[in-house]
Length: 247
Length: 257
Ligand SMILES: Nc1ncnc2c1ncn2[C@@H]1O[C@H](COP(=O)(O)OP(=O)(O)OP(=O)(O)O)[C@@H](O)[C@H]1O
Ligand SMILES: [Mg+2]
Image 1 (cartoon, helix red, strand yellow):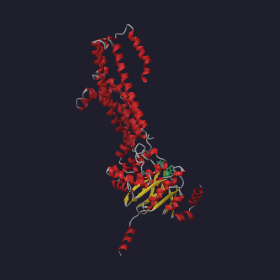
Image 2 (cartoon, helix red, strand yellow; image 1 turned 120 degrees about the vertical axis):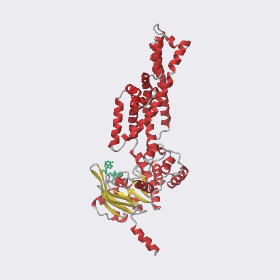
Image 3 (cartoon, chains in turn yellow, blue; image 1 turned 135 degrees about the vertical axis):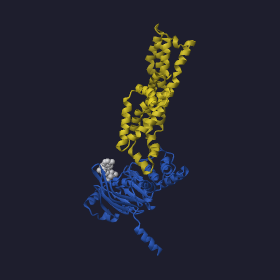
Image 4 (cartoon, protein in one colour; image 1 turned 90 degrees about the horizontal axis):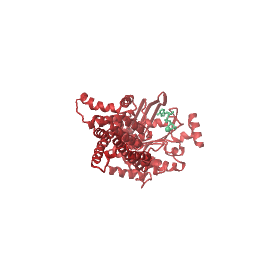
């Protein structure tokens, strides 16, 4: 298993845990206090996953919408695609989160929850990358497929839906998996606007318990396990689709 | 009297496909140079010529895979352009078979065949399936419907591609070197199917260098060079006494192989 790769790290942590300077009691599941703290930390998992999954779903759709004009034969839609991608890529995610949460409500005169501000910022930020992934994936499909779809009079939407995208998505699945992993990590930034996800929970516990080393170590492990699981899931999906791959 | 009248009407009827001084440029390169060609209903035209002479471009302009820059193309009296009327005429009349088959690799044979009828013609899935079964029978690929394209031989794939085009029930079929990508032993099975199709009264334009097949099937032979139609004649005269030197040389080369 892949977890074996992390043996050195785990051993190191275990050794360190035995030495005097560590105070594992804060998160010792054998004690009621430790158990409570552990549950408090793990509770953040829900929002980390909810944020990431919602954001990735939106960013995939947004990315596809942005990718399509990038593939047009005419110049104006291609320019729109370029401007969007370059602009969004230039903004740091953290800045985008702050802007969406504090700025957008004033500009658009709406109120936005922490959760949806986080989702929106993460999704927009990631959509530029998704757009590039989709564009490359769609471009990798042989021109003959477009021509065959044209020859049986499929509309543009039908051509994309039934012919091009199913083949393109199969090819970009690994890249989409990487984006999900990336998103899980980036979701930690939403803690700055008060989202009670994994990182925020850890920060809060550190403030009350004064045990940053142990608590942040648990945080590292939480992300590690989460991301290893997701990576394994993506690989499983890939293998499954690869088996039924037609060319 | 009535018979005469209908004959008169026929003579006034425009040809099914009508190309008038069609020009096509790729950048500054002229791929078609004032091509004019009339093709009547159920007529079979075989186009040949050296590589790069514009054969593919010509037939691709007919179904709008390429947009011509000047001149006019009419199908069944409708001008081929970006209009909805032109799209409808193409959908109802024109099918195409490619050199590289271009089957949809992620779809089963059945789905390859029913996609067009269901999505573009609005046919019910059950009816489309019956249609697909019928045409697979016609191209002699029954009982492979659940397979995927890469499980078939090249010859079988090309016959499936022909069936896919036929499922749109076109009156005109365009073939762009349908046997050029095939191993020699599979060429005959595909040409047989195309020959049978010709016998049904389908209007066909075939780009091919299979001259034996052309002599059998064609009503009209067309020789192209440098984007122009250099020679156009019934097969007998075309093969026995071609007028232009370029056509003579081309035929000598091709018949030697
Ligand atoms: N999309 C394109 N962009 C630029 N040039 C093109 C394009 N398509 C075709 N051409 C050029 O136009 C000319 C005619 O091409 P076409 O494919 O019609 O030739 P052809 O007679 O079918 O040749 P072949 O026997 O090799 O298939 C060629 O010189 C080709 O390089
Ligand atoms: Mg060609």
